[in-house]
Structures are given as structure tokens and as C-alpha cells.
Image (tube, rainbow over the protein chains, first blue to last red):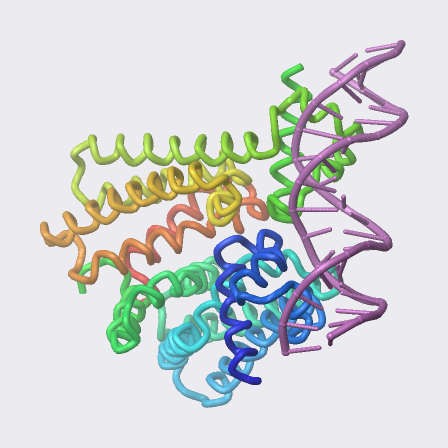
Length: 189
Length: 189
DNA sequence: GTCTATAATTCGATAGAC
DNA sequence: GTCTATCGAATTATAGAC
């Protein structure tokens, strides 16, 4: 059933986060599902395929999200705010999958890995363009766009550390804290 | 010789970064050193011991660094700048080891893992105290100290992505970019 | 869908000769 | 320090009975 399928996904993602993709064995997974190793292959064709689907699924969601923002034609500063909201939204809805994006792509097989990295590079270019446009229009201050891109994305990448411990109802507050940090830093206003 | 020992360390760290700790096999390592698997154990007692020494070595360096800064008695805003300089310095000197800190601690054996996480927690508390003091004294603006701590550390954690591609002579420029981002964000000054 | 049994491979590490 | 040879354990995945 879809019930059991969802439990499987939840357990598998949890174990990967705890032990890393290679650290999670099919025996671990079977034990956490209280079933036998062979049954796992009722849910997925292979361990690799599971990782592949999770990673590319999230990659697609991030691309769709930023594409909508760019298409909106809003001012750059508003687009950056919308980007932060996108991160918070996806991290609340898919906390474990977002956490996976940082590292586990290393364990994709070679051809998938390069495809994934290519998608990530294209995504970062979209962010960089967003920031560059904001600088050119004088909506945010001048700085190295490449460094700025990485600093913003890095600050967002570790969001999931808070999501699990904080209740979702604090989402708006969290969103505001991050936005003000990215926009005005630690300095007094 | 110490030469060969250093080559070993460099190769091992590179492979771990590329494939993850569990992804790097002793056979990979032997191939990259152009020697046999058995020879590796002239340099290290075990694969685990190597990871242990690298991770706790870096942990100690970060603790020593922040302890010196706190002991200096400088104003909080200056301490934060010194903290950023510490990160840039250590990341330039030990780029691969710093990169290791983010994830590979998951592959320490249980007792070492909890010890490592404890050290990391204590480190983060030192940073949080530094930021809280700055807020109390009115040197930086009020915000959730826990969130601020993670945002600052996250922005710094991914430094190594630039260090490898940028020449070291740009270190000062990089330091300045990061400092201004953490202190004043993307906003116009 | 669930199990037992096992195939086929790969892993870290060691013994022992040189 | 270097090699050959190999051990014992663990890995993903499958075959086939129920």
C-alpha cells in the first residue's frame, strides 16, 4: 500500500541522514521496517535508484521554484526575498530530502553525478544572475557576485538544522530572521 | 620518509573529499600512491584512525583559535571579524581538512562521534556567547542568537569552495567580502 | 507480499617472504 | 619498506518456495 511505501521512504531517508548513503545498509533498512531484506525490493528497484529519484526530484523542485520567481518580473530585492521563502517552504515540506542535497550526490553513479552537478551549476547561475541584476539596478550593494551567491546559498543550505527542532508554526519568524540576516547582516540598522 | 607520509595524507584527503570516507577504499588509495594495499599500513594503523586524527586535529585548532580571540578582550564586533579571519586562515592552510569537518564525522565510531559532536557543540556555544554579548552591548543588532550563530557558521563553512579555485593572494579580498556580507548583508550601506 | 538461502562481489586488514 | 596471497566479514541483489 501507499502507507507502507511512505513509511519506507521516511525510514530510508532518516537512515541516510544518520549514516550517509553508503553507511546505510539494506539490513539496517529492513530492521527499521521490521521486515526482511528481500522485501525492500518491493518498494525500489535498487539502492542507487532510490538515491537518484530523491536527488533529482528535489533538484527539479528548486529549478521550478526559481524559474517562477524569475518569470514574475518582480524587483530584484523582492525576488531575493521570494527565493528565501522558496527555501524555507521546500525545507519545511521536504526536510530530509533537502538535507540530502548537500553531500549525497557524491554517491550517484558517474553519469548521474555529472548530470546532477550540471543542474546544480545551472541553478547557481540563475541565483547569480538574480544578484547581479540587483546590483546593476542599485537595489543591493556592489560585491563579487560569485562570492555573494555562495554566501547566500550557504546560509540557506543549513536551514534544515533548525527545521527539525523548531515547530513549523515558527516558519514565518524563521523566514524573517534569515531574510534580515541576508539583507542587512549583523549590523545595526 | 616524511615526504611520502605527506603525499599519503594529501592523496587520502583528496579521495575522501571526492568519494566520501566510506567511498574511498584502501585499494583506491594504494592505486593513487602507486603502491600496494599493504604499504598503507606503514603510514596509519587503520582507516578509522586516520579519520579520527584528521577530524580531532582540526577541532582542536578551531577551539584554540576562538579561545585566543575571546581571551583578547576586544570589542564584540572586532571579535567577530577575528573569527572570520580565523576561518579564512585555517581554510587556506588546511583546505581539505576543513572540508572534511562538515560531514565525515558521521563515519567515526560511536564513542568518537559523540565526543566530536560534543566538541562542536561547545564550539558553537562559544560563538553564540560572542554574538549574544555583542547584542547586549549594542554592537550588533538584536536577533535570535541561535539562528544568527548558525547563519554565520554556515556562511563560513563553505569557504573551502572558493579557496581551491582562488589564488591565496586573494585571501585579503575574500576576507573582506565575507566580512561585509556577515556584517551588512546585501543591503546598500 | 513474505520469507530462507545464497550468489557474487568487495571491503579492511594481516601473515609472511624478500 | 615492499610485495604476494589470502582471510573473514559485510555488501547488494536475486532465486524460489510459501
